[in-house]
Length: 226
Image 1 (cartoon, one colour):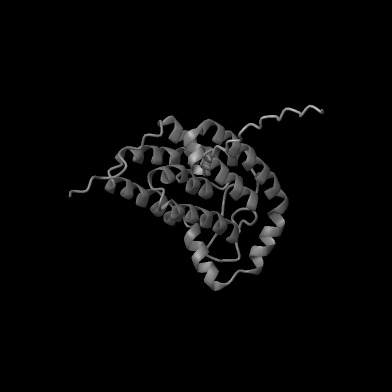
Image 2 (image 1 turned 120 degrees about the vertical axis):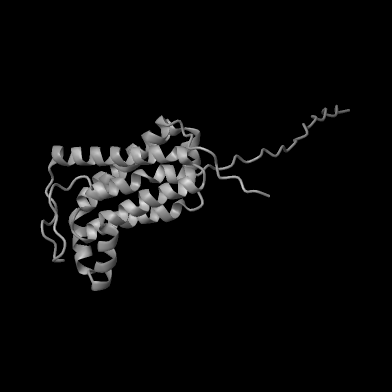
């Protein structure tokens, strides 16, 4: 008689559900590992900056084709230094004071002066001529050098702190900073690469100032009475 083969015992496969790790947004990744985020930002921004140099002429030609009196009015308004200063620094400072985050006002202004200093310093070191010394709009004229865009650097240097202090409404100030950069190209004050370089410089300054400050910008909000 043929011996029956011993049946192999099948191991019971237990399906254990492994909880999915929540995906982190770029903003959350900055909070978890700010040093790594700075390096990644610098590397990615460098590639974008190099690409922007090749697109300077194309982008300038594009904006020259879409100029209208309507765009002239709004782009000149966004490009004006008073508008930038009032919204990105005076308004944010008032918001911080009203929300009980007075500790964040000093790093905000420190980011402003630091971005202004380094953008001006780089202008005189690089000495890149502006696209146009006298724009087609008769009431605008530009002096000095082009790279990087100081307006854009100053606008973007406030973004890291605003994202930390007001995450729900930070999109408004980010959108405004982007429009500032676009307006500088529209009015023919800067090339695309000037704006990208200014944005990169401003973000790096804002991140480094916030990191040096320890990320502590005061209480989350003022306490409401029941």
